[in-house]
Amino acid sequence: MAAMKFYSVPGTPNPDVVHMFAEEVGCTQLLDVVPLDLGKGTNRTPDFYKVNPLGEVPALVLPSGKAISESIAIARFLDEQIGGSSVVGKSPEERAETDMWIMRVSDKILTPIATAFQNGPWLDFFKDKRPGYIHKELRDPMAAAGKAGCTWLNGELSDGRTFLCGDRFSLADVRFYCLYMFFTSNDKSQAPDPALTHLSAYIARIKAGRVLSPLSRSQTASCEPREDSHSVLVVGYL
Ligand SMILES: N[C@@H](CCC(=O)N[C@@H](CS)C(=O)NCC(=O)O)C(=O)O
Image (cartoon, rainbow, N blue to C red; front, side, top):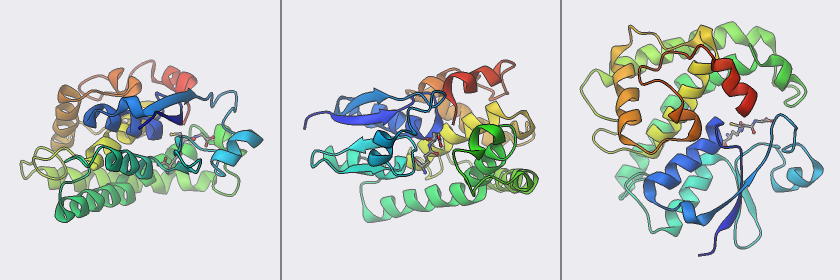
């Protein structure tokens, strides 16, 4: 299969889900990366709205000409092109387990911490780009919900499993890692809680054993927020 146009901003969390997934399953050759610049707003032009009406990255243009967005949908499409992988799941049970963990950590952690971020330190950046979704009142309750979710996940991980789906490294780990690292590193008030030792050890295991995204590579193994973390955003933005 020929490479497909992949609109991306490497170093931002959702595009990095696809980059990390493609590295993991060995299909980077399918992606013809078209870099956009969120700071300059090249994702919010009439041309790009034709690719993704939400104006968000990533987006993949399929051989038929149809464009799809949503990092998980793109990863699943790529997975099918290569005949499937354990990362998505080799059986209906494994695939269901992957989806279960994608949804669990999205609902309990990733959506809350992303919402807190977008309505907190990056409210000015997002308020014109996502009209109707940005409300500063959301910041504190969403941050609190994200912390509750992290405490819950830490408890789950205390059973000694290696990854979310046990011994199997999955797309749920890829997504959790890319988004969690980004938001907790770029928003000091949402920095990882050192008391959540099982969560920190899980993150360190992923970092130690995987080909990581450009952003993820720049994080420290202990997942402590970087002193210069704000500069990551200046390059990347969400
Ligand atoms: N649910 C989407 C989220 C996409 C998303 O929020 N992308 C961010 C980058 S990580 C973006 O395009 N932000 C810039 C903007 O909204 O202008 C996915 O999984 O791909």
